[in-house]
Image (cartoon, rainbow, N blue to C red; front, side, top):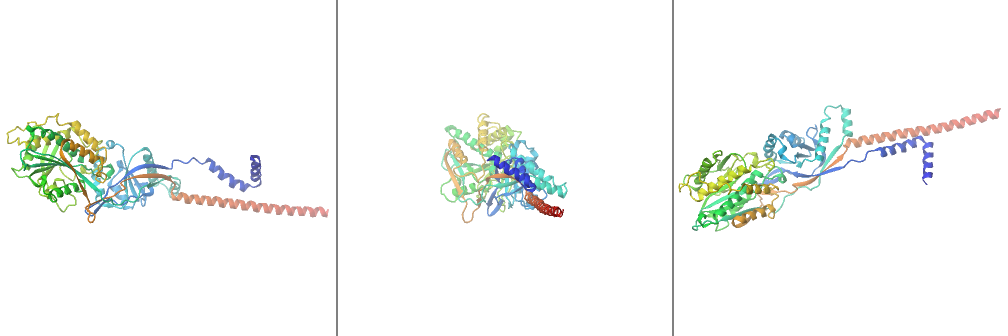
Amino acid sequence: MFEEASEVFDNMFKSSFPLTFIVFIPAVLILVSPLPAEAAHEFTVYRMQQYDLQGQPYGTRNAILNTEARTVEAEVLSRRCVIMRLADFSYEKYQKALRQSAGAVVIILPQNMSVLPQDIVQQFMELEPEMLATETIIPVYFAMEDDELLSIYTQTLTSSTSQGSLSAAEVLLHTATANGFQMVTSGAQSKAVSDWAITSLEGRLAGVGGEDLPTIVVVAHYDSFGVAPWLSYGADSNGSGVSMLLELARLFSKLYTYKRTHAGYNLLFFLSGGGKFNYQGTKRWLEDNLDHTDSSLLQDNVAFVLCLDTLGNGDSLHLHVSKPPKEGTPQYQLLKELEMVVSNQYPEVKFSMVHKKINLADDMLAWEHERFGIRRLPAFTLSHLPSHRLAQRSSIMDVRSVPTVDMKKLSRNSKIVAEALARVIYNLTEKSAPGDLQIFTEQMVQEEQLSAVVDWLTAQPRAAQLVDKDSSVVTTLEYHLARYLKDVKKHYVKADKRDPEFVFYDQLKQTMNAYRVKPAIFDLLLAVCIAAYLGVMYFVTACHILYTIVSRHYFLVSQQIFCAEYDFL
C-alpha cells in the first residue's frame, strides 16, 4: 500500500510543479514549526475593597476582567489590563491608568514585604487611603509575585517600552510578532452580601464590696483594614491592642482570684468587630446596653472606658481624649497614674494627652472612644500614634514581617497600662505608694504570650468582610476570653435592610489566568500573507496551464507543418 502511495505522489510531483509547491511548502512549515509553549499561567488575585458606608460607595465597583496586558509605560492604555510592580508604583501612574480608561489594574506585590525599602512601604501606606477615597469603576487587583508572573511582567514591559524609538514599519512588525497576554478572571460580577453579621465579644471580672461598684471598661477592635481585604493582617492595628487586652485580662484575673487582691471595681473587657467601619460593633453594643436593657454595667457607675489601639511600637504614648478630664474624676486619676508610671519606671517613654473634639459631620470617627463619648460615657484611646490620620492604621503593609510590631515595646506598653490601671483600682496614690512601686514584675507580663497572640492574629486576614460569626478568629478569641473572664457573650450587628449603614460585597478573591496570545494585527497580517500566497500560487498555476496549452498547440501545429512538408516531398 505504501509503495502505491509513493508512486502516486512521485507521479504527482513529477507531472505538476505548482501542485508540488502548494502541497510541499505548507507540509514543511507544519513539520518544522516549534512546539506550542505553555498557554496560560494561573494565579490568585485579591480585589481592592468594595463597600458602602452610610450610603457612600468606596473602592472598586467591578470584578470582571478579560483584556490584554500592558504596563503603564505603554502610550495607549485604553481597555487594557495595566500591570505594575509595587516597587515602581506611584499615584501618578495609577491615575494615568484611570484617566485613559484602562480595563483593569493589577499591582504585583513581593512575597516578602520586608525586602522592600522603608520609603516605598511608607509611600504606599500613604497612598492606600487616596486609592479608596472615591469609587473606582475598573477592577483593581493585587497579586503576589512569582517567577511566572514576573516573566509575564518583564515580557509585557519589553513590548510596551520598545515601541517608542522604532519606526512605523518596525512598530508594525514588532506588534505583529510579539507575544501578548490576555488576562482573564474566573469569577462573576460582585454583588452585595446580605445578612452579614459583625461579631463582638465581652467578658467581665466582677468587683467585690457592694452592688453599685464603679466599672472600668477596656476595649479593642480586632478587625483589620487595608486596600485589599484578603491582604489586611493588621499586626499593629490592631493586633497589638487585642493582645494587650488579653494580657490585661490574664493579669487582673489572677488578682481577682484572691480575696486579698480582689478590688472594688468591675472590669469589663470588650473586643469589638467592625472597628474599621466606623466602629459598628461598638455602636450596636452601646445601643443594646443603654437603650434595650434595664440592667447593664454601662448604665450604672462607669469610671472610664480605655480603648487600646496601635500600641506595638514607638517610644511614645498618646492618650487621645474628646474632652479633657476634670480634676478629681477617675479619668483624671488614670491620666495622672499613667504619667507617674512612665516618669518613674520608663523615663525613655514620652507620654502626652491629645485633645480632639468629636466632629459629627465626618463620615468616619477618628478613634473608638468617640463612640462612647457620643453616648456621654467618659472614654479615651491610648496609642503610640499622635494622630488618627496616620497611614499605619489602615494598610496592607501592617504585617508581621515588615515589622510593624516590636514585641519588647508592646510588652513594655502592656506593663505601663497594667501598672496604671492597678494604681487606679487599688487607689495607691492616695495610699502614698511610691511611683516606682511595681505591682507586676517583668516576669508576670509575658512577652511570649503577647508574641504568640500577635503571631496568631497575623496568620490570617481579619477584614470585617471575611470574619463571620463562625470564623476561627471569633471562636479563638472567645476561648481566650473564657479562660480569664466570666459571662463571656457574643454580640451581633447586621445592617438594616431598608437603610443599611454598611454594605459588603463578594468576589474579593479570585483566580486569574494569563493566556499567551498574538495581537489582532497578527491575524490580519497572517490573512494577508495567506491571500498573497494563494494569489501567487493561482498566478503560477494559471501560467503553467497557459504554458501547457500553448506548448500543446505549438506541438500540434509543428506536427501538421511537418506532415504537410512530408506529403509535399
